[in-house]
Image (cartoon, rainbow, N blue to C red):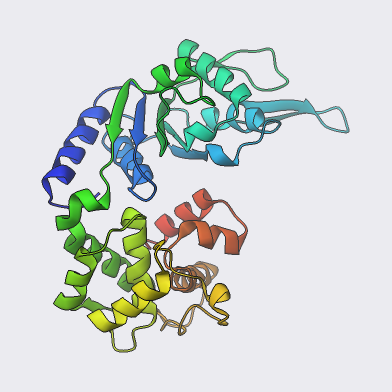
Length: 319
């Protein structure tokens, strides 16, 4: 959440005001505008900042397993022992539950979520006991949910007590220099290598449409850095990356280009690791470079959730 453009200053002011109340917030904006960052911004400035921040990607929920994941489960194992699996509402107790892509939530789960928000009570699957849910809910969508045929209107009005639209990158072109500096800072923290963007390359970036918004900008800068030998990213090199990305703006992966790797092996940021923690950090650094900083791609490579990748990156100070 950086930037000095007036639209960015106005956005941070609205997020700060939202942090001071307890009402549900609906963050609206195109893909890549930073809705999860905005949710974290609200959480960290609220009276729940000391509590957990739990993320749920509603697009990954199934009709059968979604309820147990969200509200928890109770069951008997093969030996007749009672087993309990707390849901995300319980794991987020005292903090914030962020529902990303809420427009993709299955209809049956929408009804149960509405009831939980209306009453403040939840019930685990397989249990008769109601439990109080001490959670603030923030939600995000890239769709217009008003009148959306697959989304309950009563749930929409419940989660949209406060609506905040995140601006596209095209609306905050003046922020590109500071955003690029932030990306380069993260690259340096992850790889131990510093990179500079020439004024001509920066001007080239300012002239792009960026349908993928901030995520696309970061991806382009990461990719250009991967192919930079001297730590200097000039306009010619950046133009090649933009050309390879094509009209859709997505930079092709190494696999789709038929290459064995996404670029040269990064120089290690630390001495040869001596502990498991050091090994994990070094592996994360290599994944960041190889996947252009995409948490989703890193999660797929590691076969874990994006949230797990987020926690590991935060633990090692890599973002």
